Length: 218
Ligand code: SF4
Ligand SMILES: [Zn+2]
Image 1 (cartoon, helix red, strand yellow):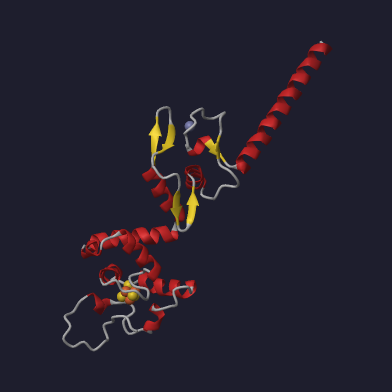
Image 2 (cartoon, helix red, strand yellow):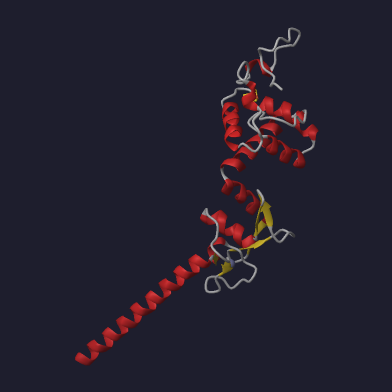
C-alpha cells in the first residue's frame, strides 16, 4: 500500500498536486499507521501539516473515499466522520474541503472551541440577559461524551468539566429555563459560594458585636 508521490514512475501523468507531496519519496508506511496507534497517527499528521498540498490531498482522499491511512492531515476515523455529514460531491469544491479539514482539526486541537460552536448553534437569548436552550434535543454528544445544556454552558465558559451537578443559582437568576453560564454553578462553585457567604455573615456579626460593645462603653 503506498501513497501517491511524485517519484512513482507514471510517465504519462500530467503534473498535479502529487508532485508537491511532502510524503513523496519518503517511507510511505509512515502514512499508514495502525488506526488505534495514536502516536503514529499523530506523527503522520505532523508530516501533512507542513505539506503544501494538504487540502488537495484531503480532497482526493475524501472524494475517492479512501478507507486507509492518513491523508491531508486526516485520520481514517476523521474521514469517516466527515463522510457521515457530507455528500461526496461536496468535495468537488476545494474551499469546502478546506473549511471541513480546518473545522475537523480545530475540533481535535481545541475541544472547547468546538463545544462553543455547539453552544452557539443550540441556544438563544431571553429578555433580561438570560439564555435558554433552543434545541429539541435535551442534550448534545461530542466525541462520545454527552452533555446536558447546563454542563455544556459550564464547560464552554469555565474551560473545564463541571464537578457534580450543575444547577441554576436562584439567588442570581429567577428564570427557571435559564442556562446563562454566569447564572449556574457546579458543586464545587456552590461550596465556595456557601463558604464565602458564611464568612461574610460571620464578619458582619463580629462587626455588629463590636459596634454594640463600643456603644456600651460610651
Ligand atoms: S497531505 Fe500528507 S498524505 Fe497528503 S500528500 Fe501531503 S504529506 Fe502526503
Ligand atoms: Zn438567568
